[in-house]
Length: 329
Ligand SMILES: [Mn+2]
Image (tube, rainbow, N blue to C red; front, side):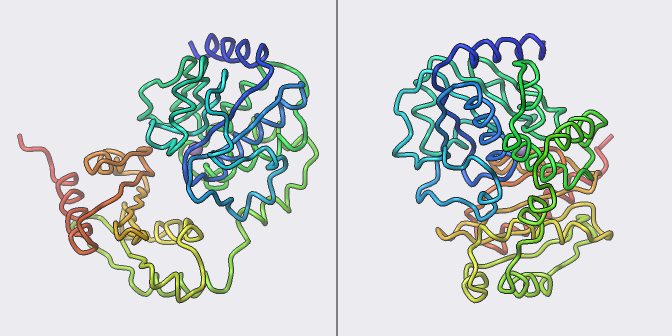
């Protein structure tokens, strides 16, 4: 079925003079790498492209500078209002399109490329494979279905998506196929070491100090199998950094061997708390997140809470304790 859909998507994109590309709000390297990779590939074939994501204000993450072809990105207000053909990247639900859901809804064809299990099958051509370790992996398969050369810029962008979404090829979702596709991308000449540095070794001293504060607060709740910490707006202000620069905090907290689930609770500018969850393998955190109106993958998920820091943490502990309790017989 996936092969048939790849063929359909290839047909739609080959016939289009212009393709508009969208990824989810607050994009990660998988979302933007997939977008920029496909854009570079289509441009090399003479297709006009434009790309965006629905954040207002529209600010590009720092690492975008390491991804070739970012000149295709425009602010949502400059995105076509009624594009003919749209491709969406790494987006599991309509609301994750932010203020770009209108143009996507009005498009004649929407190739929807995603690897989230929670995706209900959106788009006119749903290219959704929950077994793919990254959206970039599916985009690469689509390029192979379309045929032709992969420009170096496109290879770098897709590699960025793969290497980040797999935790540098360490997470469970990393399959032999993932590694084969990544190896194939590495055959294309791009500056692999510079890309890795921009993605993984580009922290500021301010960030390291914020990280120190956050790690001081780490708390273990053995009854819930949980290790958690929190981050306030005042903390990032003191470090002179933005909350968007703190995505990797969870990757440090999750290394604690004493708990299966790691959580980082971050205060947003509007006072709500964003909860990031990771499991080392034993807990379906997507189910926990869904119960709170969020979503994600089985081992990596999140939700936003309106009930304050203490109550958010207390509810999380209760839910995890309940999930661990043996089912009544
Ligand atoms: Mn992804």
